[in-house]
Length: 350
Ligand SMILES: Nc1ncnc2c1ncn2[C@@H]1O[C@H](COP(=O)(O)OP(=O)(O)OP(=O)(O)O)[C@@H](O)[C@H]1O
Ligand SMILES: [Mg+2]
Image 1 (spheres, rainbow, N blue to C red):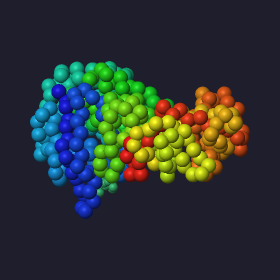
Image 2 (cartoon, rainbow, N blue to C red):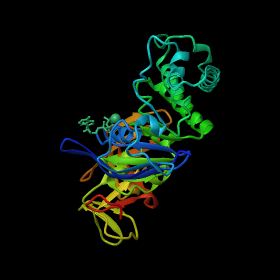
Image 3 (cartoon, helix red, strand yellow):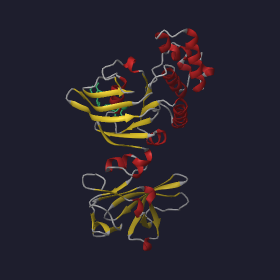
């Protein structure tokens, strides 16, 4: 139970095409995360799935049933928003019980479900409190509790943690991961946060301008991004992209002075991509690539180093935190050629 499938879904607001032909599938029990820049259509897509917004074209199926024209309630999905939207005058218990009361579920059953959800979400000792007397994280858990008791076919989350501070965000993220394991329900989750996407998702859907750019597991997207867009969107700090190169069968040449020997490569790449952890600093004399330290940020376990390569620009490198670096220091760079990504002028992977 809980397979959600979109086929060629389209949506415009006025003359603006916000969702352009999106097809995707969330398998039963899968945790699917939508990521993409602000305004790319993540929330709209979620609202189309929930039924809060009507599609212009295409179909939405839940467990094989066409729900495209069904009302939100009849789709049996629960949505959790960034704003918790709790009833301020009701206790935690009443907030969680609300949908069940509306559906005229018998009282003893409501009581059992509310207490079970509260137990799962560690809210048992807060059942009598009003939302104003709870922390942000607790309020978000009440909102999730309200979603759980309906025993929906799937959960839709729209940036549920973005109102929380960093520590609470991490904690609640881990709780959501646990909840997913425990319930085994299909979940579709929208976020801006790299770490949330990478840690929670079975499958990430990268969106841009209302279109799917790539779908894959976090590892697949990290290891084999299909475009420069996905390459720079997944991973933090971002992948370095070296544009305007030419490949001569042995090396990529970026201008007269900058050459990176890469060996045999398929196709005709013009853009070379390399992640910050795949470049190491070495003695300038021992390398064909020389640079100067422009800025470095000490993060504890590692340094985030920006180096300036004359004729090429800045590269970002992840270096050991124990390395003592100085501004302006000359360094050599070694690129792990087995980890290089190649793209063409259009930004597609070659
Ligand atoms: N009801 C509406 N009427 C007109 N335009 C809308 C409406 N809802 C959304 N849009 C537009 O559709 C586009 C996508 O919006 P959406 O809220 O889905 O983006 P998002 O990816 O969720 O962005 P964010 O990350 O900022 O939340 C935006 O350009 C937005 O202005
Ligand atoms: Mg949004």
